[in-house]
Image 1 (cartoon, rainbow, N blue to C red):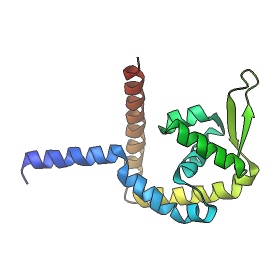
Image 2 (cartoon, one colour):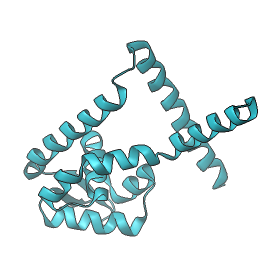
Image 3 (cartoon, helix red, strand yellow):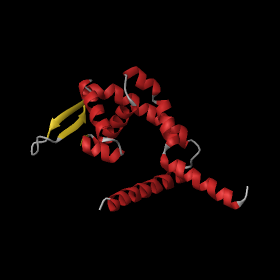
Image 4 (cartoon, helix red, strand yellow):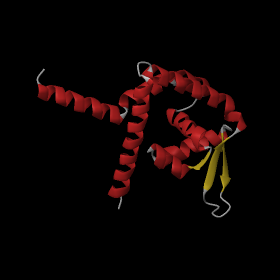
Length: 156
């Protein structure tokens, strides 16, 4: 393989990594049993994963942070509320704004989601040294910041 082919292959791998297709497939596969057991869609799992860290947020924040379609988020949030996994409360200052948070009923499901996520991350990161993991985290934060800056600047 010549250097041009090697360079293209490296760029292609970076594009594939940044696109997240491999990770998306891995997650879909690893969460398939949980989704079947709880009759959840992947977007509902993604929203629950986000809410583990966010604790309380809005649907608008979810679709912005997860880069999802507004309509899909709205349907998924409604479904999670109907099942008792999420609670929606109107904002005191603006009744149109709904704050979302996990309910106590969601706790067993959240524990299972966290266990599956941990298993997926352990599988992916098994060959990384502590210094490589630290570098990966630092680079990931910088990439996310660059993504956000690009989006912010392109929307001006």
